[in-house]
Structures are given as structure tokens and as C-alpha cells.
Image (cartoon, rainbow, N blue to C red):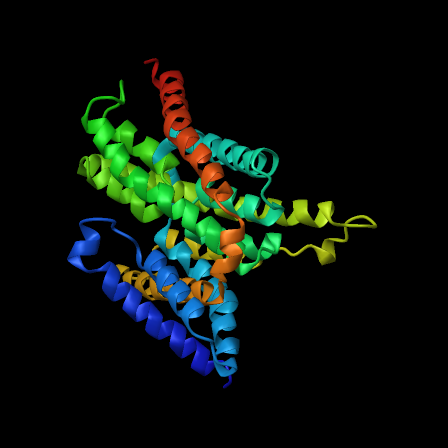
Length: 338
């Protein structure tokens, strides 16, 4: 019962965040998802007032347990048919961009800008896969602290938002040479940070671009599962002192639940009405987790990191934009001969 007060607070902040994100002025300008709005509200609340001790167990529960449940049911947004629809060409583009962006992100963050290991991995994960959700899913595996996760979320939000407006503007200006709406959609899905941002970048061009961007992006999201499993083994081996004991590896079991939900959704076992309800509830749960993250984040600790995370994220943004265009064009040429 001691969890209830804190859970109620994160639920109330989640309702407020969803209301704000649905306001027309927000949709027509920054188009922030409720997840991003929730972390901003949480940051304001958590750094403006002293959080009563009675609320902390429930806030922590929202941040950890509810987050894992939300990630599991995130699988109902996907089907394995999505992977088939995007084709081998799209899968290869997604895989190349995910792997290269992640590796570049870790290298640039640690070696060039001297960021700590946890922030480096979370920033790389958020930029290479699916923004805030990927950051939060990666945090427990790399043992990231709240201010580190919040900084990583902030950076992918900034550059994901820029991408959402930049991509369609550049495409409509005719600067993405040799791309039609479908190929542009694959490019956007493989390189824009958040799912909502990739979809928005597609819809700003056409329905065809939106559909391919959505499928390409969701295929990339599916790749979150194997990345988290690999990271779990990597960190277990890296920090082991007397060899790796498989029992001690912090395997993210919620990832298997995520895959199972994709399988259930792929078989169309539930009516679409119920799937839509599940997705709406899941968005609410994710928003609660983000509100909890904001509350638990100390802005003063974020300030100590300075501009370095922004610099690292900007390098990844430039790679996603320019490198993604080159990779998309090269793979498309290989598959289609021009």
C-alpha cells in the first residue's frame, strides 16, 4: 500500500502531460509526445519542492517496475509483418544505421568528449534506436543514474525534434537527390530518433512516406531487444573479476516479454479495438515512468555535465542525417541498380 501515493502522483502528472501534448498549439509547433512533456513537468516538480518521503516508494515503483511493464506491452505496436513489409533493403539500412550510430555514439561520447560510461551508452542507445524509450530501457543494464538518463533523454529530444522539421523541409526543397517518397520514408524511419518524430517527418511529405517511415522505424524498434541482451552480456563480462557466471548476468527479461507481445500481435489474436486500448494504456504507463524520471532527476547534477552531451548528440545527429542519406542511397542502389 505504501506505493499508492507515489503512483498516484506520477499518474496525475501523466494525465497533465497527455493533456498538454494534445493541445493544438503544441501539436502544431514542437509536437512533443506526452513522454517528453512528462519528464519536463517531473523535472519542474522534483526540483521545485521537496518530495515527501511517503511518495518516494511509489515514484521509484513507477520508474522501474511500471517502466518494464510498459516496455513489454510496447510490443503490441509492432508485428513481425512490419519487418517483412519493409523488405530486406529496409532491414539492412536499419541494421547498419543502428549499429554504426551506436558504436559511434559510445566512441564519441567517451573518447572525444570524456563523458562517463553510463551516459555514453544511454545517449548512443537513444540516438540509434528509439529515443527516450531506448534510454530508459538501457539505463538499468548500464546502471545509469537518474540525472544521466535525463540528460540522454534531453539530447535525443532536442535533435529528434530538429529532425522532425528538417527532414521534410530538405526533401521538399529537392535537396535529397534521387529519393522518392517511399525511399525518403525508409531514410526517415532509419535515422529520426523517436517513433512519433519519424512518423511526423513522414506525414509532412505524403501518406506513402508516412507509411514507409512508420514501418522502417518500428523495424528499428524491434532491434532494441537484441541490443539490450548483447549489452547485458557485455557489461557482465566487462565487470567480472573471476570470469562470467551466466547466473549473474543481468539479462533484461522484460525484453522477452516484449518479443512475446510482438508475436501475439503478429498472430492477430486480439481484436484491433483491444490492441488500440492496450497501446493507449501503454502510452500512459510510459508517460508515468517519464514523470517519475523527471521527479528523480537532480538538475544540478545535469548541469555538471555541461554542454558535452549536447556536443556528442550533435555529432550523432549529423551522422544520422548525412551518413543515413549515403547508406540509404548505397543500399538502394545495390538492390535496385540505381
